Image (cartoon, rainbow, N blue to C red; front, side, top):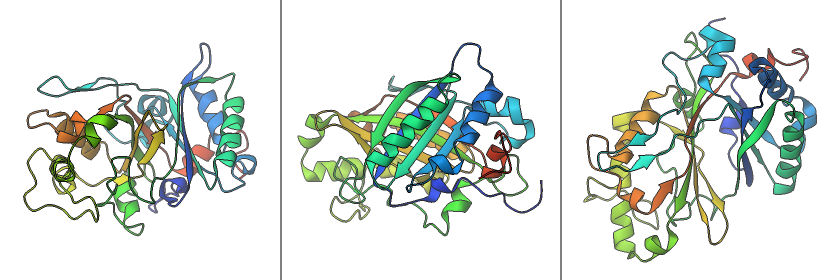
Length: 303
């Protein structure tokens, strides 16, 4: 591998898309892991990227390591055990073999491209989980607060999200994907002041509170303590059943894991926001550099 940073999957950084789909897959009985990665690599061909659709491919870390060995970050592992806080609060482990994250300017294009991808993988992998999402009031989640206030700028995001050149898995990224369901009635029963105390920020302009409690969401997610993450969170769901897709990218698993432990209350206070939102899924994926993914394509020189 050369000393220069390999080209990452650019969809990680493609902000401003209006429609998203997250498709998680498991291998079918008798299918081989190499077949799956090859089929995923072929999805990067022009036939599935026209129309303004960005496609990001992630693999179960252990699956990628078996195929690619040294091109996997050291100590990276799947979300195979739940994270359990001191009071019993649990973040479930729902690891799958692969994820496709599709993002585009309109849902019809994302819908059609998703169906094409599912069809192309049909004899190799089945859809284990599917979620569609969309932006809410430009940059807010469905609690009404601005999401991703501490995100790095796009100029700084690659340093936060990508494995550095010369390291195992260079140009790739560690993805944490979780679906959180909101208890809307309980949250909206709180006063604005109480909501702001739970979050640790003001609702209107996301100014950090000076007197925020130790249990606030801001405190339990302090990236200066745990390490920085590039978030691409999105709302999902219906009017009566909705929440947040947490989509976090980092150059290593450590800051993501420490963040989850802090939120769950492992060895400290639990994040107050977890009393109003519940994690339903949890998986880690390695998002390899584009050059490594293309090496598995049926025609590596195409695309």
